Amino acid sequence: MTIRAFDPSRDYPAVVAIYNANFPGFQESESEFRYGDDYREEKHHFARVVAEDANGVLVGFGQSGHDTHSFHPTQFEIDIFVAPEQQGKGYGKALFERVVADLAPLQPTALRTHTVEGTERALRFLADRGFREEMSYAESWLDVDAFDPSRFADAEERVLSQRIRLTTLAELGDTDPDVRQKFYEFTQIIQADIPSPEPFTPISYDVWAKRFEHSGYLPEANFLALDGDTLVGLSTLWGREADDHLQTGATGIARSHRRRGIALALKLRALAFAKERGAPIIRTDNEVNNEGMLSINRALGFVRQPGWVGFVASPPSPAQRGLGGRREAVY
Ligand SMILES: CC(C)(COP(=O)(O)OP(=O)(O)OC[C@H]1O[C@@H](n2cnc3c(N)ncnc32)[C@H](O)[C@@H]1OP(=O)(O)O)[C@@H](O)C(=O)NCCC(=O)NCCS
Image (cartoon, rainbow, N blue to C red; front, side, top):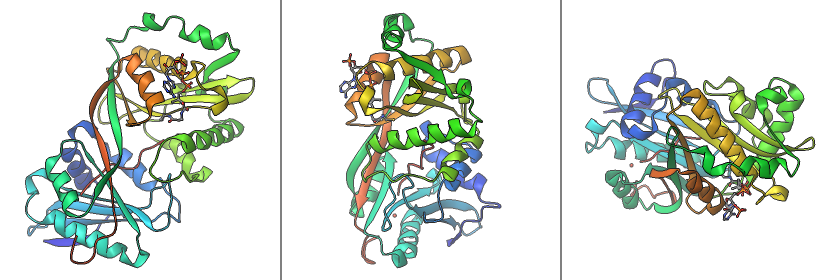
């Protein structure tokens, strides 16, 4: 076995294939994968190594990086992925040891990772290395065809009667620098209220604006609520390349405007868009205790799927040391 640095000029196809083989419900395209890799600032550490078998075939990879939405200088996400047919041969352990050893100069105080519910081998691997469960995410899918909007016939009127306007980024002018700046500022306010294990840290405009180049960016599916000229709500959908599902990004309402039905109205617009587009499924993932968002999703008919379980550990001593992987989301 050889462990070497990831080579972006040739390793992406193998790395993406290994990731997808591990998580059949969470397929990613190469460009989505690259986007996740690039969505970070100078100060955000990111390193990836790959493992090759005796024939030089890439059989696994490991990576470490700061959480770009909750930056803490000495806390890191680490992820190890081994091709399913190569598991149980020591690659994961070796990758884990290497990733942890490479991080040592940065003096880590906490390591986080994620895996999908029910992946027994990964769960055992993490428990053996001192990881304990932390924050988990419910994955939920809505069957778009089966959704009947007539159950919510009054929802939009309830919001409009409060003189709240519902629109999209496309309608506001998504290439207008002022619109982008306003949208950026609002996303940072919302992001700060989305549950995460560590406090939210804002991302720079330049990194955030990479979204406009994302293959799944849909300006007409960035649904917004305005009170006068002030943004008070958003709910976004992203196209996916690996299938024809739509992925929910952030949904958030200004604190001053909650419990007035605005989130529900925005999500209903998102559902109408999905029907129109012929997308079979809308996906979303939410922190398991985010009762506000989950109750809206339940009411709309989203159904729980295996989700991501988050883990945290103190950095292991050299005597201890191999999994994981929820990649950085786009929102
Ligand atoms: C979750 C959130 C988007 C809800 O927005 P909202 O506009 O207040 O929600 P709505 O008014 O449309 O709620 C519709 C219904 O959902 C349920 N609901 C909404 N928030 C709830 C809460 N905090 N607790 C329990 N039920 C809730 C209620 O049934 C509500 O109807 P009611 O107010 O008539 O009782 C908002 O709380 C928020 O911005 N949170 C922070 C960001 C976040 O965590 N987003 C989700 C992850 S992306």
